[in-house]
Image: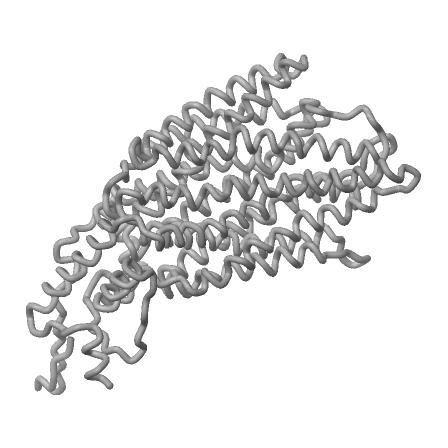
Length: 553
């Protein structure tokens, strides 16, 4: 069996020159991945990873409108004013997911580098599915409110969503050839825009369906039907996850992990040949393995690598850029319904139950406009230019444009909302901010950390960068909820937008810390010499009582 297994992976080099042979084989295998023609396997990777991001975005941004629905059913009722969640309740359901996401990004980012991308891929999706479905079935009682139950489930769902970021980024980058890597990773991330759009579209369809029921039967109080609506909107978020689960569990391990972390170069070479020719891979558990001696991840090695300024500044640049971007992206994205109501966009004159449905209808229409006019086009313009123009120029341009737009929207807020034309102009500018977030740092802050770190820290580095972004999302959400009503209901919106302009300005400077990554292999970007990356075996001499009793490698 041993002889048969050994033959299946080719003859193993032996003797003092073995490491040179393994080093050459490793570089040849990496070159095969980097220079591979675009194939169906690349499409499959994009689709499998992209469906996860579609699900993530749907589940994250569905709460934008669902929180308003929850307020009508479970919120505090003030005479003459529609019921709504109090500040702490609204904050809890919106911030629970980013907190869980931050934890998941750090945890799964580290686990993917320790136990493997494949072993973790799918686990995070199962957590998302369970957490999403549980929310739709949530209920409260005298001991715990439904908002408290939702906070717990949204936190757990967030852990799964957090795991999706480093795993999908790392898997798509490590399977991609150099010339299309940026477009592959952008295509994966662009599914976030469609997920956001789907959440709003489902909310719109559900709202119209129940609004028509009121018109058909106006004598019945249909407000309790809003309880059905938010459950339908959130619950449908688990459907795409269920569809994608099988494909995630069956995707092969990335050759780079097999080579550089498991140190099994022969198996990685076979895997590369399989996925690039047939799209399949085979793993023989009885095969004889010759381990290469390559740098290993450890706390001491981590400190040594990132302790060098040329490496540490990159982690600082990716982490802070994502932090600054998410201050605005989630500060606005999770509160766009509040902003639309604050400027009086589409506020209906009707009161009572019908007015509730008309408000939800107008808010969903406003969010659909924002999504279609800004979010989705921004991702796909990035897709067109990211491998030609480059990541760094797109990120710099995005932060500069966002700084300008937020200055105009913040300092010109009062004049803009004073008239119908001004409100429409504000919505147009708001759409432009969404466009330049996605044709800008929202895309590149995802792509660059998936490329720039060595294999043994690629997922960990991406997880740290992404978690910094979610820290920004948490800061933004807490700050928004605490400040938005200073001076009166929604009176502080203009100053919040001015604060966002400042953070976009700081993002310009953090971007300057980053190198350009286009058209370079992952190994070139790692700042490590690849010639002789596989080292000669170290011989340890065992001595007992002054007598050499053996040597071992």
